[in-house]
Each structure stands twice: as structure tokens, then as C-alpha cells.
Image 1 (cartoon, helix red, strand yellow):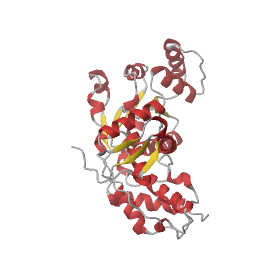
Image 2 (image 1 turned 60 degrees about the vertical axis):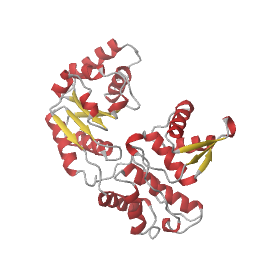
Image 3 (image 1 turned 90 degrees about the vertical axis):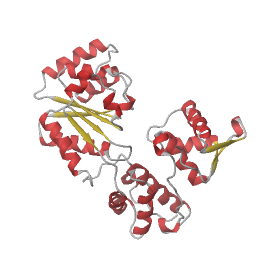
Image 4 (image 1 turned 180 degrees about the vertical axis):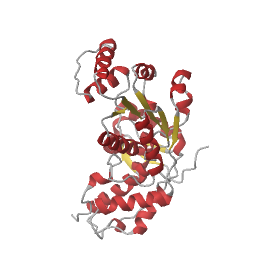
Length: 323
């Protein structure tokens, strides 16, 4: 089998490159908030580079000073208890207690012994189940950076929390040219030489509609497909992805499922679930998957053939954008 992918992890949306392209201004703004102990709210659409930009800013901040910033993913840690456990763990303090009172007490004691202020960055804020967590963090004198997908999340904060946030940073969607720059940069590291042309990278950039996460997944998918078919280049594999899904009407998980079905046209339910688990950033269980499929069928994007164990899901071609 022809080797095309030399370093697959470079095409992962979680990979943090040495330089974050086209986010210099926003990264500098966030870095200034960290250095100045300013509470901030950062927002931008999925695939706009918020997470890697935040992680890079934290990395530089922690390396260049004696101060400390901690990244917390709210899609993984959704409660006060889970978040406080993670903060204490990051401060080299392991606590077995399940009591929020005990965790708060230990965290207070740990903060008192720190030489400098502490900053917590809460990414994927929409997944946080207990908004009271923000009040608890602020009451401990901890600085706070919130990262969300939309400005609506800021509107839902109470007045006390809003009053503590003095910087709003909007992350604009990437242009097609910017996505192209990022893909070319990643392709140089991830793919073998002479296995891709700029025209193919441009097609993928145009299909992504400014979503770098989607673009990286598409490029990786094309490379894997080319390898499996014994091709010499990603250019030798037909690329027919059309991003005509109503993006603002679908969840990230539903978009992942649509992407898979656009490639395969139809799949048995079990096989589709396996592909979804492999490709989704934060895959859910079978019950949630069935709910996603029911929703996509209701929206007229997918049709279900047969029932139960013999069920096959098929993409509906020539979909019209939902209003």
C-alpha cells in the first residue's frame, strides 16, 4: 500500500503547531488578558481556531512567567466537582473527596500558597452544566477566561459575572485563503512529498466554508482513502464533498454523521456508528447516536431503510438548505 500520510497527528484538530496562522491579533489579545489578570470572554464558530489559539497562549504564558494558567475542557469536566478536581490535579494536589465543600477548602489553601495569581480557562463553555461554577471560581480570587462558540453564551451569564468580564474577544471565521494557508502548512508536515497538489488543497479549503476542523478531517480522509486504494496521491481520489448542510441547524455530531454519509452514500447503522465514534471529536453513546439519526431523518437529510438490526441509513442527495 502506497504511504501518503507520514505524520497523521499533524492533521488532527487537536495538534498545536509551532505557529498559529491567521490568529496573531486574537492570540496577542488573549495573552494580554493572561498577563494583566483580566477576565475575558472569547467566542467564535466551530473550526475557527479558538482551542489551539487558547492552548498556545497558555503555553507561552506558563513558559515565560512564574504565573500559572490552567486549561479546562468543559465538554469533559462539566460540574464544579469535576472542574475543581482537575484544577487541584493540575496544581499537583490529588484529592479523593467528593464534597464540593472539601474541594473548595483544599483549593483555597493551595491558592494561598501560590506565589502568583491563578487563571482558569474554560473551553467549550456550552457544555458546563453548573453555571454556579463561575461564581465559585471568581469568589476564590481566580482569574477566568471563558471560551464559547457564540455571543449568546455571554448573554446568558448573570450580571455579577458579566461585570467581572472586562474583555470580549471575537474570533472571526477563516476565509478560504486562510484555510488554504493552514492546510498547505499542515500538508507539508503530514503528507509525503509529491503526494498532493495545491489545486486539491484549494478544493478542500473551499468546501470547508471556513471551518478548519472540517478541512483537516477532509484532507486526512482523502489521504487515507488514497492509501487504501493504493493511489500515489490524494489527487488521484475523487473529491466530491459539498458542504451544503444547514450548518447553523446541525450539531457538531450531526455534521460528522452527514460528512460520513456523504462519502459512503449509505451504511448499515452499526457501521455508521463505528465510523462516527472514530471521527467525532467527543463521541457519544448509542442512545445519543440514535437521537441524532432520528433528528437527521426528520430534517430530510437522511432516510432510514429497514428496521432495527437491519437498518441502513442513506444520504438524501440534492438536499436543499433548510431555512
